[in-house]
Image (cartoon, rainbow, N blue to C red; front, side):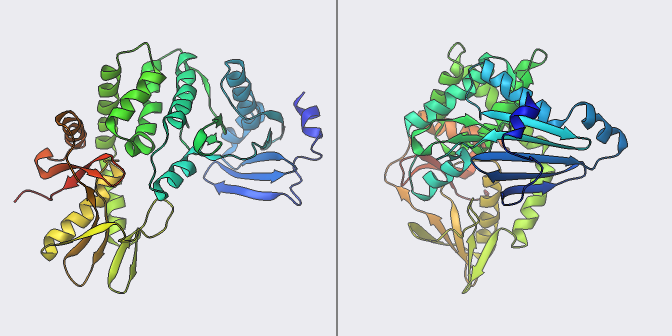
Length: 358
């Protein structure tokens, strides 16, 4: 079946004239994704030691991913259309139909941010229905992140891609589900207010106590953050070395999610002693790693202790919203007394970092 399906695209290993979409290499394999004639070709060549490479002859990655796609389709979960797969020793290739007019959810979230918008209820509900379908069917998707979910713009229309390793989960399902949600908490839930996260969890798991699930997710995420604190400190050292900033004319700019410099437009200048400004500048990056919503410090004047922070909107969040924000701060290991709560210009409740207590 797979060989016949693959043959409709000609020789699947011949990528002459194909557009290279992605490539990568690690200690185990070389990978490449190509696009041609409305099809995607995902090729993987094992370069691991003999035993690992030999295992790929009996369990070709392309065949295993093809089976994962079929599993998702049987469960009624939207996934890319499979065309076929093939393998030859260490090399295997998976062929899927192109989903025209789509971008990754990660890219769409970046567009929302750049446009100063928040995701619509329609968009969030559509995404939650996909996540909920995975959990209802006890599907474990180890690489469940928003680079592996496509959408048709701001209106939604979601499709899963690259479902490598997807399988039914019969053992330790709750812990695996938390792992999947925790990853979304890091790159998705951190971009929306706490009350919105609760609404999303109510759609994902309507049969469960939303508040209990929300707190369990926060605790699981906090434990993961603590476990990987060493790696985060290393990333902070890179930030101190200027790897995540751009300097021009005496001003140092933070780089955003797309690698573009964040500009001081829509910000307010804050003049502080040099040592305090330095501490706040570094901690703002650390808050990014912990996915805490806040009025970001987007630039600083290196000649003076001037920081440029996103401006706040009038008013303050209610006591309930304030308590929710400060709870996230405490779970991340910071002192809640060092933070205030405000609204940003998009109307979201966010933190105001007042700096370490004297």
